[in-house]
Image 1 (cartoon, rainbow, N blue to C red):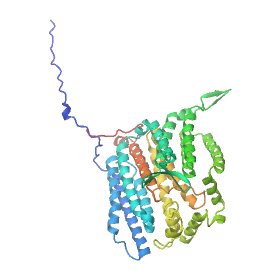
Image 2 (image 1 turned 180 degrees about the horizontal axis):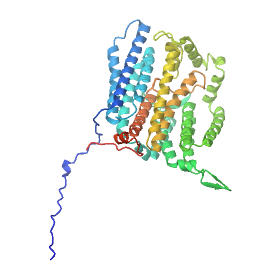
Image 3 (image 1 turned 90 degrees about the horizontal axis):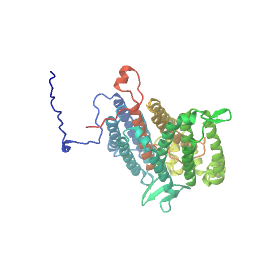
Image 4 (image 1 turned 45 degrees about the horizontal axis):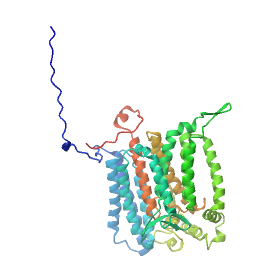
Length: 475
């Protein structure tokens, strides 16, 4: 006889909707964070250096310590602490030297800006620095995974196109020093191309990561030979060509050259094919020839670069006076507070801030600045090397290219290794557009760095696992 067994009915107790809580903020990860301890120590050290330079500048110029030295040190430490706490919460395993280097460069730049106190610039720059740190934290909160940027690449491309076109809109764009890169609304002005360069970097990285095989492996047959199919390159060439035309229409060679290097650099890194570098050189030659004949600013800057002395009292005045400032600085500088570059050199706190540093801090000071950017580039490439996805690797590489080449272009322009482009020295030159954009840039770098850091399981096993790390959100 078969006995039927009656099982107990399954019980389902739904959770009332009123008890479900949604928290959109990430959970704080408890436990030791050695990288953040290192970062905090470096930030404190950099803040003390900034405050010491600020005091020395006041002693040199006024023969007394500034009355608000303690509040100044408190503000510098406070901004650094806000960014550090954000890193401890949102990117606990990220690279520990990127933020301190950026903060130190920012501090040195602020000391030079406050040294001359031109048109209330120090107060404005301090406000921009506070806003930059705030947007740095917001970026870490919004970009919780690097792949989220990959998902919206075409939206980011459209936004970049709008930002680049904005200065060309009548009654909105503004022409300054021959370049139409500014957007003005009332008393507020901004360079939208500073943000557009980051968005273009993300788009280029996303497209190349998805199509790297098609762009590097020969798949099309021409006769008896296999060649690379050029069709996947057409969309990205159109996007890049559009960016170059728009920036050319705005009459700025600095950002045009930066976008060109970014595009060719990512294409070469993604595919590893030397032929693309040759293509880049050919495009550069054609572009330089056309720019010399079509764009007045380019022709003037090249002529000044070739022979500034015949125009030393006119178009070449800024560059020549910058060299005099560098020459008077010598090896050790004339001393903070003892220079005269701010009274003679045009744009001494923006385009020519590197010359201002060279006058008062000498070769040693400019070498420290150059070394700071070299360390920042090295840290960025280290982040790219440890990234877990192709998109993250290319994005980190592209962002590092932006920082490195932008700094190189302006420093080389001041030293006459290249024509003076007029773009800003990252983190140091006066201006809010560049400062805000570069803090957003390093926030994305640190997000990628945190994702690429080894997990506890990987540290125990010694084997790295591919793919993205899960971003924990509080329940």
